[in-house]
Image (tube, rainbow, N blue to C red; front, top):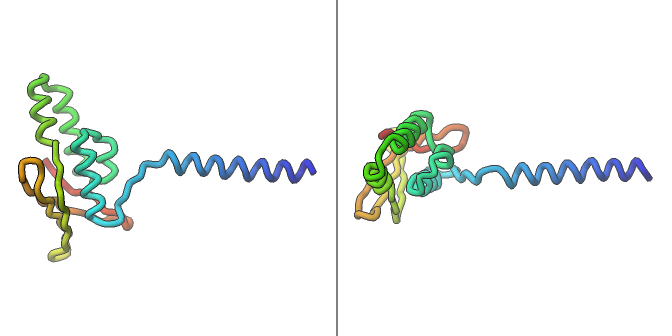
Length: 132
């Protein structure tokens, strides 16, 4: 009886531990270039650089670190201008492959702006390749 209890306890502990790990993992949806671009710019507009980095190439991460440093070193007026430049709200994202490269066209931001961003696939996940 004690052996059965110990085995059950061990497996219960394992499943609880696995559930905790899964629930703490960030929800990085990168199955398509559209998903990765959408989530990257959503997090960037919130100035949530840590989460935006989940959708970024290494060069893009360096750009995000530069922006983060720039924000810290700026006065409040400059900070507001920098923050305003990242208030992006794109309504459509269309991605296409041309000559072996994938690019996403983001349409109609707050100021009716459009942007194009390069995408990179690595290990079946998509990442934004954006340099400022």
